[in-house]
Image 1 (cartoon, rainbow, N blue to C red):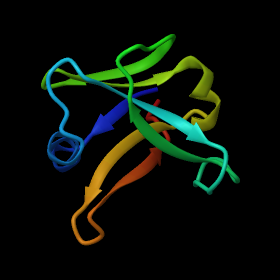
Image 2: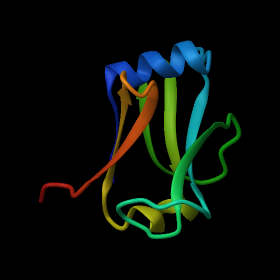
Image 3: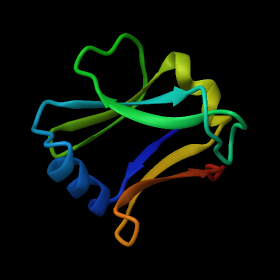
Length: 100
């Protein structure tokens, strides 16, 4: 599994969340909502500088984006791509089947 962060999404995290080098962002499962990979569950994020069990991570510009092992089930074998939608002024999560 991989985590991808677009340049626009990275800029959004730095500006809106005010992340600085050394910060860590955890993507985690919410029990409500819907996603293309799991009905009744959706994805959220939090700044979490004390991870417990990082299963997947991506480091960009001194920032770490990660998923804990306990949340891997949610992705059902998909990679995560985080992008920024300028018109909606919000992040968008895409779930991509990895190439073999």
